[in-house]
Amino acid sequence: MAASGDRRPIASRDTPWAKAFAARLAASGVTPNQVSQASMAAAALAGGAFWFAGETGGFGRAALLVLAALGCQLRLLCNLFDGMIALEGGKAGPDGPFWNEFPDRVADLLILAGVGLGTGEPALGFAAAALAIFTAYVRELGRAVGAPGDFSGPMAKQHRMAVVTAAALASLLEPLFGAHGAVLTVALWVVAIGSALTVVRRSARLVGHLKAR
Image 1 (cartoon, rainbow, N blue to C red):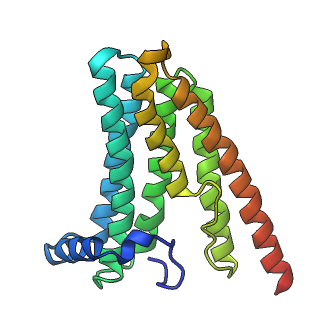
Image 2 (image 1 turned 30 degrees about the horizontal axis):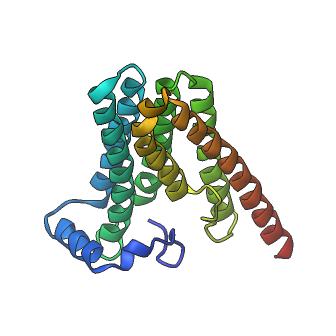
């Protein structure tokens, strides 16, 4: 895991409920790596639900969209608790850095590709996923050359999941307007463009840091 001074800032990490639940997980024998791995399962659930929602109508589509939104949020909860169990719970392992990063890249791909397949815009979904992964690449490149972790937006992980979750829930209202997948298509464009801007911003900050050394 990253050092405690180089972690993604998450306000809920300091809330009593999060601390209590993380402590219970740590005491139960759950490892941070297992929680990180569970985030991929949550992302697969969300991505699959988005995909099948595109081919479904009526109540079934609504249920799938709600399931997809829950999967996105469950992915974020896993991302919250794996770090808390590792650091606050004192259960960090030598392979923690791998499991801290690799599942996140898989999760972005599964969710955003699932949205793209469900909206009939697979190229856009994969493009959004690639740009999302690229934001993490720039951050980790910075860490590799001695820069602090850059978690800035406008489209960091929590922002991407917020956009996709909100779009999933807003899509429940699409039948009122005779639409099907339009809201999620817009969400993919927002994620793709926002991620591209994030890559540019993080890259500029990294170059500035290197030049200032």
